[in-house]
Length: 260
Figure 1: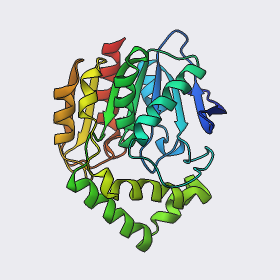
Figure 2 (figure 1 turned 180 degrees about the vertical axis):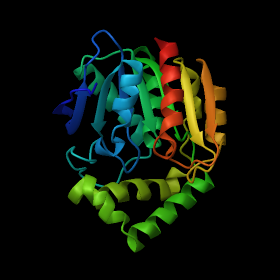
Figure 3 (figure 1 turned 60 degrees about the vertical axis):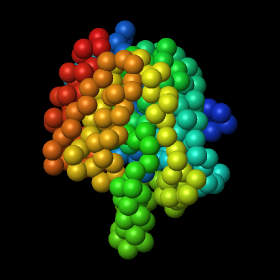
């Protein structure tokens, strides 16, 4: 079985967003996938569909403003609390799509936005899978970003990203790196919001994550109010769903089945 997707663009807070949705299982929850800081709908590849078929759930994936097939950002400069703003945009997108009691699967920035959405709008979130999300800034995070900046200028990284973001690529990359490397971003921290997360949480992280230590997962599961589990994968880096797709699919599906 394969899912049939409907693609559309929607205007949320004056921003045109690209959305794909598959509703193959009437009456079942929707899995909402939130990409990372360089990601987009296409870069999820077939992971959302595989997880949806395993759990008999519907799917919504979208490109945040400036990414993939959404409209370009007006500037790469973003406020410190840009991910909190993205949580508000997601809430409006879900309302526009007629969805509630969704299950969020977010990777990296997307994982953080999933946590923030669950904290700020708990009534619409049934569960959260946070993969390699961040709740504060660590030295390893900044070191990893500096290495990415070097790679962007010395390898084919820019060309590879261009396949997915087109002429928005430079802005996408600068929006990520310039924001996180700014001096005023070092104090960004969402720990105070986490007790408002009441939905069940699965936090997935690779033990070799280049952008964060286990402290991200440890503090998150300790601070949320709802049931929570930390799952660390040995020998895996920042992108478990690509580096270890089989185990991540199985673990995520088990978590989702327990919510239903």
